Length: 145
Image (cartoon, rainbow, N blue to C red; front, side, top):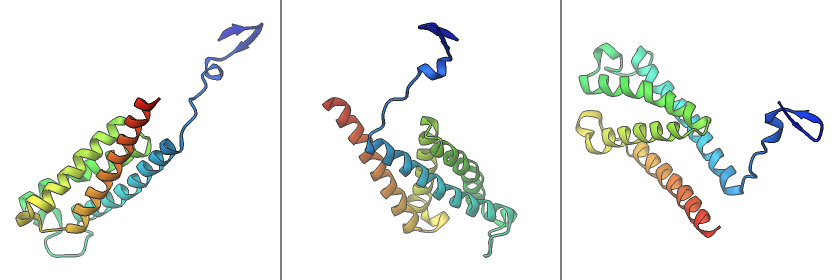
């Protein structure tokens, strides 16, 4: 507690958040939309690992070793990145980058092991482009101010 003008105030009342711009608000909503998408991706990977997913060789014990490795890694990375993106923490954006590049490498460069999935690859490239656009705008705005 601190005393100001004879009135006791908590430190929380003294701290006022900086006003947010429309770009910052849009960036937060973009990250939260990505978090929802990654929850969906998480459910798909967990369905595959648990054997609930319909399809040949999609139970964890019948998957090929590359798929077992990728499924185990992404089953952990995806929900962690979703939580980090939702809370707009910097570590969430780092984990999101790791999971995005893992899937891009899987479906673009290692397609002979994982099969080609251009929809996922283009989705990730589009989200990376939007993310970099926001970051570029923030850098430009900071230099301008």
